[in-house]
Length: 300
Length: 271
Image (cartoon, rainbow over all chains, first blue to last red; front, top):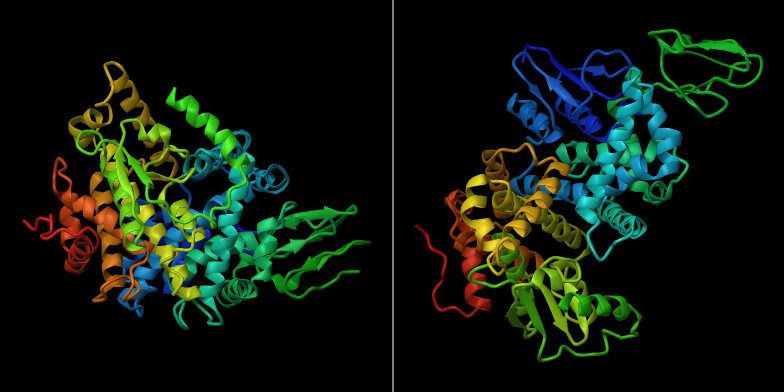
């Protein structure tokens, strides 16, 4: 436990600590269980690998999939499920299976297969975090992997056309969201007052869907109608990820996400965020607005 | 020839305006699966047994017919499928919906939260148990060599038997890789099976069925898989040993076997 645990994962945006579902699951679980994780965000240097993200590195070994990482953290006594009964533990496994079978295909489709979303949002975002020439190859490969997964698990006859598969997976995803909403009801977390593994998984899958701004948004619209799930995501973001610098976001007049620490310009004037204390946000603009996600300041 | 006929039916059937709810369940409903003795594999046997158990629980008569080309006759490529009136429906999920449209349902008495739980547990069984069965059958070299290849290709002459078996193996391995099971070892798969059985055992507790007094489609599905694992002879007994660790699951299987399949003594061996 004295050894540092380092997690390398994809970075954040749109108010989230990470836009990648698996990375978000691990980060959320670490916050819930109090595990001290050092988060290394993947950027466009050649440092670190990009396959199998998120990856937990300890002194002795590296562990890659979210389920295995969570198992490892539990063995290190960082257990968020300590207070659950045996039946609740069993329910956790069942609901995670439900998420992976019913919701994940539609989330993958929204991010990686739907061409408007992929070309305007996902690909530029991921490509900006990979060094050239990986940025030309890897997003395409990730997209193809997502499509293959969807087709192999759901695209069996008699659904011969991708469009029919799409209709089916979105139907299943909406049903899954409704089931989750029914199960959550009015409680704060899925099992009482303390968050557990299931909350980490649900948060990991739902938060990117909820917050990332896409052109084609049918699943997002459905999610926004389920107010208790939206409240669930916002609660976790505010309680556990509020002070994280990665969650800070700046939006310029063209509604483009600017990352913390970056110097950006619009209308030929410069707007600069000063690290590390975001309160000293200063900007010089002649027209247009530089908006802080926290304080909503408008600079003149 | 058979394939052509089914292809034609596939194209024209959706255009026929049949009201499924209006017709009662006929006496001559049939369930098709592969040949029981020589051909059928663990996962298909489990699926077929689950559907049979479900129909028994609904008190609907069904005749089981074994055909070597059942997989190709099925509209979705999966067995089992049922032929009722002039409708053909395959796999447990759609069959449950179909039976519900005819007015029979096992899960009407459940409230919304229980229905969500039931669906979640059914996904757990599909996600872990079924995938583990497929892994054992097609990705474990010992089992593939000794049992699967021989059984899968048995109705066909050489070289078709080898070609079809290799083709199916390639398809299954591709799927395993896509869902992240490609790099798993047999021990990890067995651990997953153990975790799944533990979850099922904890959920069942001391109740007779998963949702107390009445069986539902979840009970049928769990019975289908566990009973098949317990009674099928594989190259080693590790899979069935994992299930045997949980006595309430064994009792559950025996109870359903005796109640719905009318066997005087159970075929589940303990040793």
